[in-house]
Length: 422
Ligand SMILES: [Zn+2]
Image 1 (cartoon, rainbow, N blue to C red):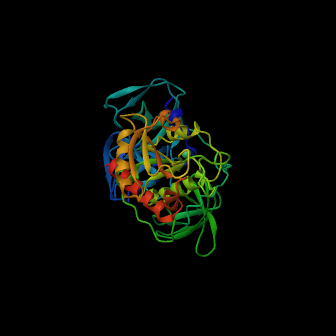
Image 2: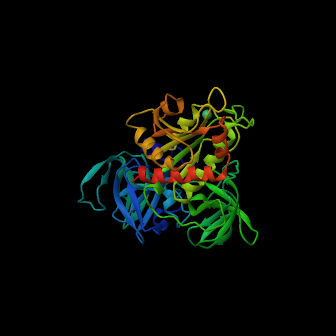
Image 3: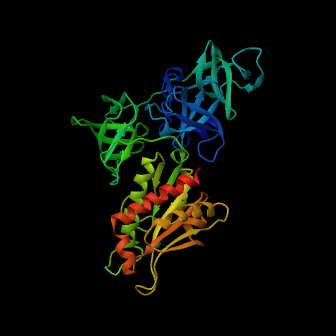
């Protein structure tokens, strides 16, 4: 049960014969929170400091389950451990080979017994020392004599069939650390074509699952893991600091798309075009701040309403922001921005935090209102819907299609989220 929970949904949770103990990594950020579960919503149980050593056990929702040097197990936002491409694929699976094996709190016979393991039970070994194996046990860890575990030999390295997509908001990538591997395929089993150094600037070509397809300055192409690189919309290097926004997963929802063009401007341009432009600017800004950003659509394609909140739930989003443009029955009848929420306790604090910043926009701020929209109503995560001006008002439209207005929106949302997550 525990195993199925841990491996579900993790594209990288492919056990290899590599031993966990060889994959200790060192924290390079100044501070990183360790949480009780894979998301910002879980309590902080410890804090890692620069130089601390940890071992990655598995991955879920882009969070790593890690083993601390204190033997405790917790979760860290994977994108903040930017010094390595090591993945969840470092633990070993095994089978209990003896009846009634005791699971101990510490690696010693006289330590407290936490439970009993039946013969043939499958276990995940996260660490080994002096004849004892630390295993995942009842949502925490326990120690078992290594002699009672038979390691499974797992065959590996069938490259997953991931279709690359292009995110047009990304122009370049900056590596966070030394010795990042450029691989021939989007998997840790991919052949190593080059080893790249910290602060390397790469040209972005495409995204394939958790990997970026890139080109180096000397013309080599290949894949680097997305947790080793920060995307940028310009060619300037990016620096990120660990803060609460950097730990957050944000879903950005560009309203409409494909056959559903949304509202129409007087120039017969579509709402769907501008919502996507705005979302890409916001995404770039938040990613520069270190956040994990997921888009409900990256191109002009149709996405139904229900998949949007479903995606937010799937990635355990800490905030869902839907971007729309308003329209009045007749042209030039109404103007300004409106911030909508559905749940008073779940959504309104987020709505208030963002709305406060929207005062910087050149359009009237019409305030925070209750809105019975499906993307809010069906959303399990904190969610807001922003109407960022009336597309069929000629003054509002001047701003809506301007780059400076869209950039100001990105800055405002960034500031609003920074305060919201404080
Ligand atoms: Zn709309």
